[in-house]
Image: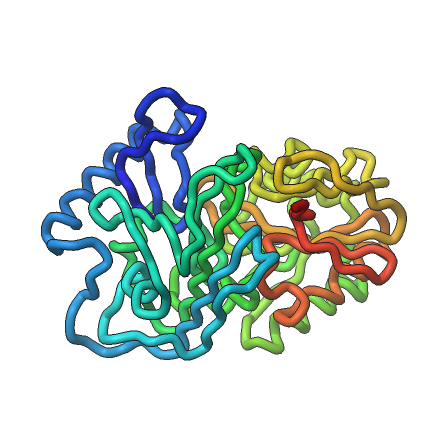
Amino acid sequence: MGNPVAARPGRGHLTPVARGRRGMLAPVARRRRAWRASTILLVALAGAGAAGCGLGPGPTPGGVRLTVTDGFGSRLIYSGARPRISGQDTVMRLLQRNGSVTTRYGGGFVQSIDGLAGGQVGGRPVDWFYYVNGIEAPVGAASTTLRAGDRVWWDRHDWGAAMETPAVVGSFPEPFTDASGEHRTPVMVECERPGSAPCQLVGARLAAVGVPARRSSLSAGPVPSGLRVLVGRWASVRTDRTAATLERGPAATGVFARPDPTGRTLTMLDQTGRAASVLEAGSGLVAATRTGDADPVWLVTGTDWAGVAAAARVFDAGDLRDHFALAVSAGRRIALPQVRS
């Protein structure tokens, strides 16, 4: 990951690229920042002699987990609670120590892992992307130092419908346990009804993994800083500015679900951004997104209170593992996007 300049299929020109934990093309509005990040990365690569090199002797971080999947988490390639690490490794070096990796652009861009390469599949653009503790960040994998407890997740997927996936739910209890100390605590659980069973269950699930959480009503004023979990029916949750962006589709949020503004239906999307199914009464959704560099906002929502309750019940590591987002309807768990072959 981290190639500074790349030619993309279907794009007849070279485009500045900021590839970091998200590993994707920078939107036009961020090109100036992409050039700056690319320059920093090139200097780092030159100084290291080769991208992906470890940082040398030092304490080896404990509790690191590495996951590699294909197709938005639909196919597991590697999962290791004790991957090989040596000293102060980088995210890139961690991957290279535990898999067969080919790179391009001076070693800063992952081209293939265990034989699965980026490029074109069925006429669609496919590449490798990575997430640390469920969050993308605009720094290269070769420049990202591992910290104790980090959950590193690489996934190869179609980026034609969503060039960015700012946050994913499949590394739960990250980012809440915050192994790297980047987020303030306690987490704020904002609820349509703070005394409701779904709101209490979400708070209890966070408490069970050692995360202090404070419950409050949905914020009506300025958006507070820090990690937030919004719990309630979509018709109420959508009043939050960040949550409301889900109605604009995956290009805006990286979430492959589009709630109806009335809150009566949830349209599930496939990897190309097209409608795959429509969920009605009793359906719920657990998803995460973020705006700019703000902390992620998680959503535990539904078409009605039965749907919210269903979503709250899958707010745990076992159900969310390796999913970008998760819907639930009539007892079925639906990984999003709904990947079609």
